[in-house]
Amino acid sequence: MASSNDSKADLEKVDINSAPHSAEVVLEEEVASATGPFARLTRWLDAQGMEARGLDRVPESERQPASGWSQLCFWFSVNLSFSALATGSLGAQYFTLDFKTTVAVIIPMCALGCCLSAWVATLGPKYGLRTMALSRFAGGVPGTFIFSLLNILTQLSYAVTTALAGAQALRAVNHSVSLIVGIVVVSIVVFVLSLFGYKWVHHYERWSWIVCALIYFICLGMGSKGDYQVDLATPDMDTGNELIGDVLSFAGIMFSVSSGWTSIAADYNVHLPADTPSSRVFMITWLGTYIPIVFTTITSAAWMTISNPDYIAAHDADGLGGIVGAILGPVGGFGKFLLVLLAFSTIAANIPNTYSGALCMQSLHPILLKVPRVLFVCLFTVIYLVAAIVGREHFSEIVSNFASLLSYWTAFFTVILALEMVYFRRAGGPLGGINPDDFNDFKKLPPGFACVGAIAVAIGGIVPSMAETYYTGPIALAVAKPYGGDLGFEFSAVFTFFSYLLFRTLEIKYFKR
Picture 1 (cartoon, rainbow, N blue to C red):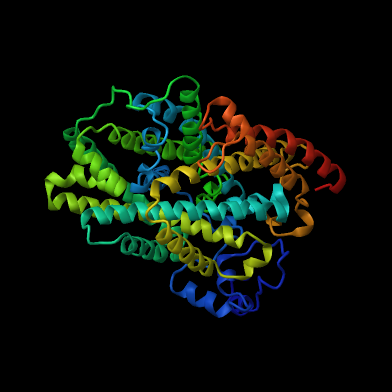
Picture 2: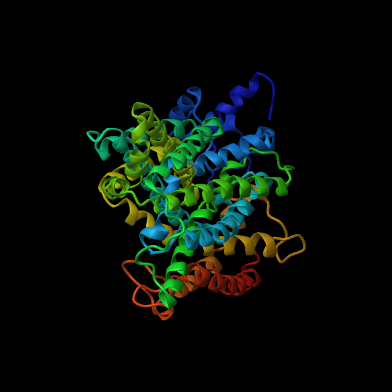
């Protein structure tokens, strides 16, 4: 690209939207100066400092090294927000598990789930592509459409639960503040920050985790007045096969929570140089997700052991916000101030949901690269705002059902992506490496039959092995009755592995791509 004054005139002629199959790397300045139906809006947004780039690959010339500490802080912030507390309490609340059993499930399942997210994160610097763009090399356009649709639903569900958690905290500060007002306030702040894009996301996340960590330590200490009973079994804890079923179901939820970043993990490393060591990215991502997730889930599990009737009543009335409000109540105005900070800590978790959710919308079809990213941010925000308002009184139920379903598709997505990148696309493998610039080229992407077929087979394994409030499959019921033991993500992974290995081998044989 020319560096003379004529380059500006040349850039004004660039139309990145005229050829949706183009394999060229698009520079940020070309995105901002493109022609097409949204060109004027794109240029105006870029002038305001908002990120113009959407799903396009980030070229090496626009990448910069980042300190390991800043990357670690990013993951700490998104996983230490107030909304992150929700899942740990489900062990006692829905599965009758005592504190020790809950912790025994949390520690290993989080370790496994975080490994998946950490591996996907290493692909960002290597290829400069977002997670859903990378998935096109395995699923083609049809397979990635399914992944993107499921990912949109995932990020919407995360956004809803996060907004609800923030609204609960605001309500605990002042009961005259409705959940609707809290949801709207949190969502507006998230929307503004998400508009400005990747750099602003990282700037905000670098510091927000410190406040959350301090408040949690204060709450844990003050919560002792509620009389923790961590050594006692819950009054209705199951035994025998029923206990096995409870453990399996809760294990699936914890796997889903810790692997929940898998479908977007690469998004937040695309601006790192390609020569960034994968081992460094993996370890930072694993530590940055594992430590805060384990800490927050064990913290909320500990709060479920509080025996003080007033604290229990506060939880029953207002959920997590209620019990934290009761714990901080004795310190008066300072406690309310801390609650406000906790409420706005949910912004840290919801920014990635909104940012990546918008990118997932753009990845539904290559032609959507013509539409500026910020319009998808607007659409995504409106959808989750409405959904949060409608479901505001069913927070725990949403978390429980959503977390289980997430583990099913996360399992088959990760297996498909791993087989493609590690086996089929390995050096000297059936297809060799990938050219990341081909992510939007129909002719060079796989047709997607193998991916769609493997997903169908995975669903065939998931349905009879799942245990949800609305449906329990026969395999799950064979573990324990009447509620079953959820084996959905295990069956999803195994069925996907063998079916995709077979289908993709045949697909490569006949289509050569």
